[in-house]
Image (cartoon, rainbow, N blue to C red; front, side, top):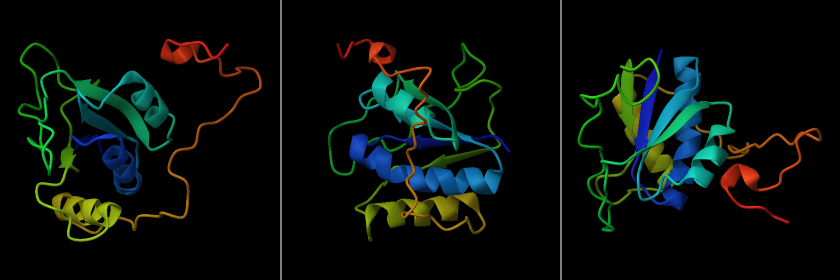
Length: 156
């Protein structure tokens, strides 16, 4: 099942939404795509997130501009399918789109609030979120040392 998750938030909100993305990917039985607003979907963050086995691709929508309000608005992208493309990700359209941005103040801790809203959108129970297992694991390969060049900067 092809699933697109969307998150308008800043870096912290995006990172706290990842355990729910992992639960959704488990339920869908394949990695999900993640759509971010252009203000917060910088290349470095997207590359970091794409290292997670439950994320297929991340995208920053250049037309999704959020206002720095609390909560961020608009919490959903205005259009999911662009008339000049096949959709957000390769092989779109998606079987399900789950919006992870909160539209009111969270009623509980942010990762739990995101999960509860995603479960309601999913339509059936999702696997429980697991906050004890790291949700960002970057495999380190001795054959490919990190230089920073991947992100347009050198660490040397």
